Length: 249
Image 1 (cartoon, helix red, strand yellow):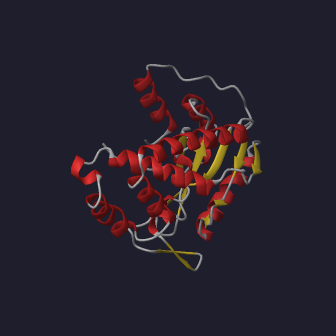
Image 2: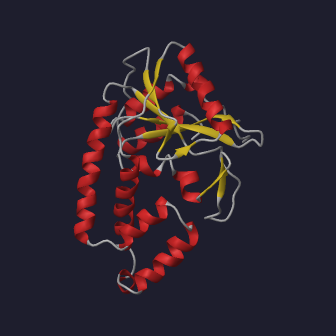
């Protein structure tokens, strides 16, 4: 969508519910800029810090927080769940070895090369039901950690990815980040896949563009089941988002 108002309209149609009224004039926002070995590049991090200062200058409370969430475990658990559930959609002959190994090679290993995402998804593809059910329980425990960590905050702010949006390219190409080669999935999904497990609504918003005109964004995380409240809180930051030019009719 092009605005939070558009999101409210879509959510209203989907849920047949009315938006929540704003309950505060000042937000309490935690922010985290890196975890599990992934950190945004210099240009993106500078843009995010500038955005944070603008929001702070508007009177909102912002606090840098290193949450006690095991993001490596979040990714591994999410990968097992995703891989196993994906396997359930594959035609029966391909669910079993050696055909599942062939599928994994072409769909996963060959595309994503190396990295924690590839390993986690592979573990799920090869997992049995017992391991899947254990991952579901682990997910519940990790979600409770998230809830307890952020129950006193209105929003949690994180990067969307390690950089601005990248030009379209072949899946799996190595990316350069702060002078090091980083696998494709970690570069683009390092800030996404770990939090996908936590089952809370997230608004992704552009805040600036890089020198090539590609958007740099932030994720604004809410609380589980509070989609309307997330939109209401984010609407208070609307003036600080990058404006997308309207398309001529």
